[in-house]
Image (cartoon, rainbow over all chains, first blue to last red; front, side):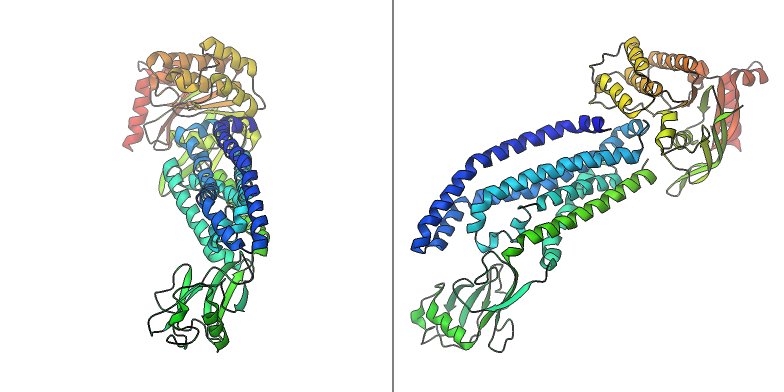
Length: 360
Length: 240
């Protein structure tokens, strides 16, 4: 059975291995240069205290590559589910060869168990190699990324560490399960993709924020959490509060960020419809925009315009945020990979049951 | 007469539709048994139940005294050649034999090798490039070299030309005689079965309308050919 599984799988295994070798070689050749450039930049910026500028420049120079590689790691599990998982059983059903192979002296359950085991391990290995290589290569960029692209950010998290292995195992078994239920390859592939994308969207939105209770805190306004301040001529003051960063916790995954007024009420004066993906705008702060620190001389939209922010801080306005700190990256990786492993085992158990009782 | 297959009130439902219902039949051992019946009589369903591909919805079925199905031991005792004789198009003839050797404890490697050589199937040839007749012969070789006690074939020659049909059935008949194998094969063409079967079962609407040794059936209706006898039984069944 192991021989047959390998014989049927070796073509796609060889193709995948070839692609992975090219990818890993390219990353291996360019990674040290990238790390060197980062180290040199850090050595230069620390004495001059210009590291935020260096980070922006450095990340900006590689952001397309960074996003591209992240996307590749996110795609690998989906492709495995589509091309390894879904056709595993449907291909046999469509060609009628299930009637040949299931009538040898091997039970269907054993046939499926060996296939799930071998191809599943290959799926985990492929996603693992790809994910860990990209994690290693992206290290310097992860340390200088903008908050929206930090390691804990939903999109990046799934393309780092060990999580891609869990996704790949799940996607593969999901493909097999859907294939068994649908029985035809193309519809099974389409449905596998739809379900997998839905799960991959639902987990960061609904599950991951609650893997551990989020940390909440109130923070003074400053350069790290305010994008800018603007005042209409003689009108109210607009404070652009970042939704993705809290001071003192670089790389944290910020789940909510609101401006609290001096009595602690949240969302004070938040402008409806002005809340964007990267900042919320508060505009009913009772402070003069015609004179004083927030007067016309402040200049429009200068981040870290300290006199005005100091004045707002003195009034008692604070950023109230809940977040998952960067230090939870690895615990989250293990928990999430474990969850996907459980899902995978559950689906595999279902498949082994179903193939015995329902499929003919 | 011991039976290799005994069904009692056997039924199988697909969703709400009964594919086989109230089927009671006995297949004698050591014979080449032909199963005839019109399309939709439940022949394929019965054969799939016998090989354990399907489980029965109602009734009892014993094959070689055991429950058909899911144990490796029972699978090893029953061979099955499916309709249209599927093989893996991407695997070579030699790889099919290797598959058989890997998956069957009682595999007869020399039988398989000799048979493939006698048929002139090049071991390195991919099964997808074989003719229909050659593919059927390859599937039969797999079924025979497994050395089952009962070999079940579902319409094995339906898609073959007359020459390939004759070769296939002759090969099957010889092998059955050589190994004392019980054979159960279905067809809707009596002429095919007449060539090698020594026992005949006519199934109409899941019911056995006629069953017996070919010699006896012919003797009981002098002047009629086997085909006429079978057709008469089918008409009788359909008329009820």
